[in-house]
Image 1 (tube, one colour):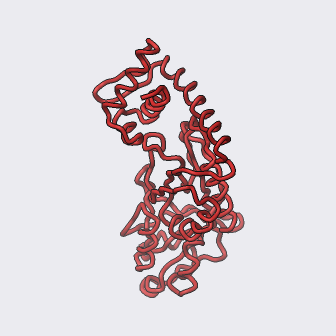
Image 2: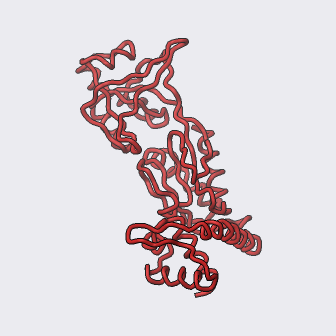
Image 3: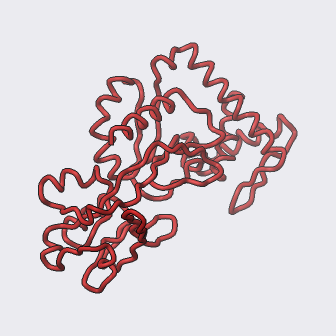
Amino acid sequence: MDRFDTLLAFVRVVEAGSFTKAAQTLHMSKTTVSQLVQQLEARLQVKLLNRTTRQVKVTPEGAAYYERVVRVLGDLEEADSGITGELAAPRGRLRTDVPSPFARFVLMPALPDFHRRYPDIQIDMGVSDRNIDVIGENVDCVVRGGEITLPSLVARHVGDLPLGVYAAPGYLQEQGTPAHPQELETAQHRIVGFLRSSSGTIAPIQIRREAESLQIHARHTVAADDGNAYLAAGLAGMGVLWLPRYMARDHVARGELIPLFEDWQADAMPMYLAYPQNRHVSAKLRVFMAWIDELMAKI
């Protein structure tokens, strides 16, 4: 193993907080990663990590060394990019995680165009609405609805999703069509709840008309933390939905969903793309972020 391997192993252990997780992202054994870090500490004659049976914590000396090493590894990748022409033709594996409806309705249909532009980029896409440990799971970036406030991540606002309120025809036939948003809080009506993965609570419906602004807390008989499951429950007539318009558009055209409260405006959902703060922004990540910007501008 050369010096580059030892530096990379050290960086991944610091970022993952675990030898096991670091080994998984490097496709090495835990023993090999541990030996590489030990070799680095022996060469520097400095203790970089404090190890216990439960966790790995970086020492003050290790934290200072980590900051320098991250910059060095970033400079090396940039230098390689310049020599190989990666800036003109980015290549390599890009690991990302995106919400399931965003993948289904926006990204997947547009991927053929991205592949034509950048045929040497391999996208490994996790599809979920769960909280992702971006650093620990060695993910290059995530796309999420709602603000991202973790200090370890750089969060870029990439746009806002217009929202609407909808219900299936079958639900409206059974429960009646509400004329005012506050009717959703009565015993007659119910919503499909969307579970926030961070807190396990139900997101309320924020809606406004001129000077009137409401936050609707309605009862539900089913809730989901996945966008596709949430939509499916609404289509099945389980309750009123609060949806990005791009998800509802085709279902409205086919008569499977009916828009409600069209003289009201639901607050838009901000979308963010986030990546590790100390991680070098590679050419492949830069073009992926630019592509996301393009797609969001069309929604």
